[in-house]
Length: 489
Ligand code: ADP
Image 1 (cartoon, rainbow, N blue to C red):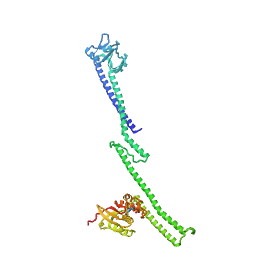
Image 2: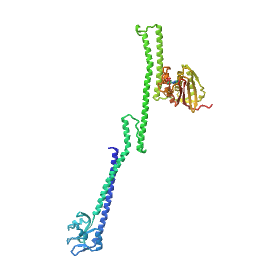
Image 3: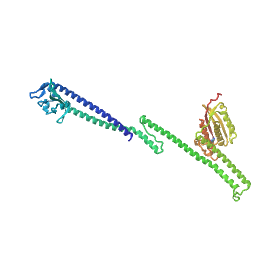
Image 4: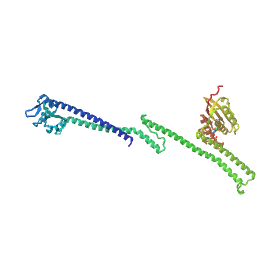
């Protein structure tokens, strides 16, 4: 049974019980009040009459002919019947005679009759009467002489009560039907958004569409908040899922690029090893028909190739390891590091790197007293990546390093007058294994250097800027937050 039906059943049940109790109370009260009034009137009349009984000429007991009170009594529709036991005669009031009414009298058995003393309902000829009846006794001796009955017609009161009962029953039923229908309608209306939540959840469970959102423009009540929470949850889940998917795609690209990159040196190594095998271990008829000296030269060349490729591979593997470590979220220890000595040391060692361009270092004195929170080894690695790139991509001209201090940050600027890059290549250079088209084949490289540099910069809460033009050179500025303000000069 759905919630809306259950809700409707519950409040219909409560409503019908309330209406039932209310109707019974109203009916009971009106019934009691009507009969109570009738009974007290009859009793009043009975007491009055009982004191005015006289014997008639025929030997029956009757009411004294007090015309005024008789008239009043009959106008008020009181019916009086007196039965005299010893003459067995019955006296009736004129209105009874006129309408031919007769009340039943008890047998002349006093024990039995005394049980009938009090109010009794009679049905005479299909008409209901309420009668008070009792014995007539002689005043002095208390001897029972007759039986007096004073009654009134109760049909009108009964009709009113019946009508009231029908009104209460039909009113209750109508209220119940209207309230239940409206209740069901309201329950359905208020459950509709919940149904939407369930449908959306179901859709997600069945498919993989995480972009499902529930449209709701109602008030921010419980349901509004539930929908808000659901949509928020979906938004976050979608975000996480997308991140995960991106990470997975990056991982796959990384693995496929890595295997591709590793295959090239391996192929070269295998080719050279095959050549060496052919030269030195193959049967004489299969050996190249060359003199010993040439064979020796060829072998040395092959060994040189193997050595170069092995170096390249180990460089690649160590770069990949750095990035794999970065991917696992591994961080490194950081301490306050004086920047000036660190950069001086790097620029000094850079002199020994292979290069064809000139190498200039700007004035580093402004770094006196400038500290950054970082890791010495990783910062050095990052600096070398930019300097080596400058050397690699500047066949002639100059490569320069200088520093800028600006708004609590230190900028380390690497500028060269080398080959530069196209504008649309800039967004990709920090991607793994990305190498600008013109760099491929011309210069050695893995395409991992800038990815590693970017990771190190991010881990130091820094940023990097690139300005470059094809054929004119490139400038990279690495910004790092400074912890101590430089001393005022
Ligand atoms: P690698 O240098 O091993 O190819 P990097 O990740 O260090 O890999 O650089 C990615 C690409 O960015 C390079 O292949 C090159 O095309 C371009 N690049 C990097 N630095 C420079 C530079 N100073 N001048 C011109 N191009 C550069």
